[in-house]
Length: 114
Length: 114
Image (cartoon, each protein chain N blue to C red):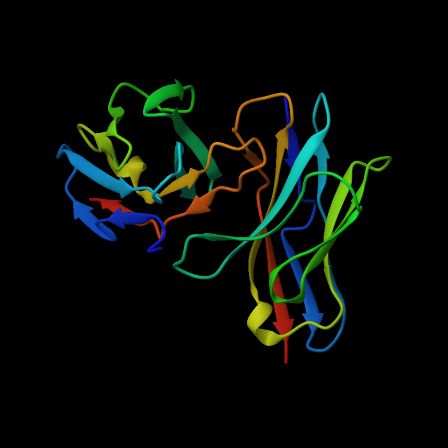
């Protein structure tokens, strides 16, 4: 079985400061890992994904994520937060050996304070 | 590309009524997913289709829920009869055939059952 944990329900960060949203995963094999963002009253939007190769993945809107196999983590990061980054962020995992079913975390609300 | 299209965007109905939610996938996408999002339970996968065939419906709550995909361009999720606890946002997501393909979400249907 595959699972994802997002240990923080909410993260608060001041505008201009770096941000990190944490994610750890569990799969039986090698993972595909994803980050999505959801703005109020909108569907989930794809930010970035890790498939293979470089552990640092760059995505949309200046976000990046680092895959750490030994710690089974895939934390989302951004060097300088914007107020417009305030949203709900979901980490997701898929087992490479399985079909396309993706397991989503419970989401982390990011609040960027002006 | 117009993205994933869902209709209606909002639905208010009374308990016991039949509700039909509709989804038009992105052209060329072979996989389609129905999700339900609530504050209490987060994002839940209800059913997954591949090439119009249901592959995994283990997330369908009960017999009141049914989903069809008669062709590659259209899917429905039906609730009959509806109950207040079905109130949620229902998302349709689609993905291409590749093993690493990303799921793209529609804007969702906000269902309120009175």
